[in-house]
Amino acid sequence: MYKIGLIPGDGIGPEITREAMKVVGAAAEKTNFQYETVEYDFGGDRYLETGEILPDSALNEFRQMDAIFLGAIGHPDVQPGILEKGILLRTRFELDLYINLRPVKLYPGVWTPIKDKGPEDIDFVIVRENTEGLYVGGGGFLKQGTPDEVAIQELIATRKGTERCIRYAFELARKRDKAKKLTSCDKANVLTYAHDLWRRVFEEVAVEYPDIETEFAFVDATTMWMVKNPEWFDVIVTCNMFGDIITDLGAMIQGGMGVAASGNLHPGSMAMFEPIHGSAPRYTNKNQINPIAAIFAAGMMLEYLGETEAAGLVDGAASDLLGSKKLRDLAAGKMGYTTTQVGDMIADSVST
Ligand code: IPM
Ligand code: MN
Image (cartoon, rainbow, N blue to C red; front, side):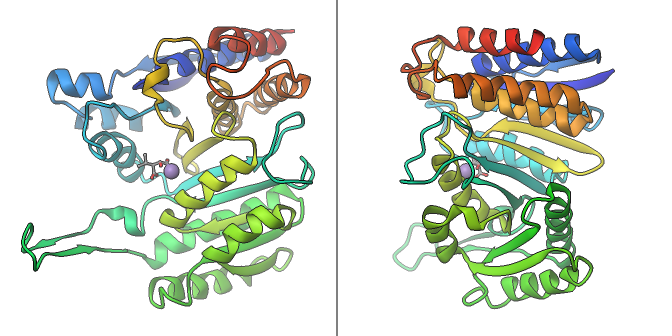
């Protein structure tokens, strides 16, 4: 019996979470596993009503869960950063979810803005370090608000944090068994401390994986190649900040935010899954948003839980729907179907 925590969140979060869980329900029935969900109403509305963002008690409950599913966080009436830092980043940090796993896969039937590239060319995984770097929130202001103001934002990189992330990426390249290639995306030519450590650790760990081909790419060049030659990549490992940026680019080349999913993992203990897109407040309760990214995230969650058959059914059903080209467009309001209908079609196809 799995225990899954749900944080539907803000904007369209609840709608897509509902469809994702509908599909999980269908998969559970089909492949015979049991789960229960605990729902949390954290997000902008609760914050505006009560001032509460994420109580410590909830974090402690999260620790007892097998997985967490998060819809979307971000509210137009709340200053940017409060909810993102207070809910999403806090959960990543306090539960030590040190891997942010973001597959970049172009499914058959999905349009990519990259000319002459197809599903065989765009199929790689970005492993983003998720607990360090520029995201730690260290730093401060001096002489704030004066002409002499100084702002300091610290980049923290530890050997332990670097190594566990890079090691995970090597293991993944081996497990994928595709090109067996790992690209380190960094900026060692400028970040001569943090990314010097990164490259030294990468080379140390690489010795243990003689079957994996390795390569270094600076982050600026990486963005160029992701567009020009995406077929070169198998697994990319990168730091928190660069991972944030290049995974939005990754989402675009795989067909957009309507399909991009991610997992925040502490391998072996806990994980949180979410679509990469935001809360799209203007589509709230319109039943027009595309739930497929959330459904793919639910598929990743099932895979993580060890429900491989169920995960395969979910991924296959969503991929079949995309391949059928029934949906006119993947953007909100342009699908030709409602959010509920898309969830129903995928859930039905999982059931049959
Ligand atoms: C993401 C998001 C978050 C991040 C924001 C909302 C804090 O952009 O998951 O990529 O920067 O990690
Ligand atoms: Mn991002």
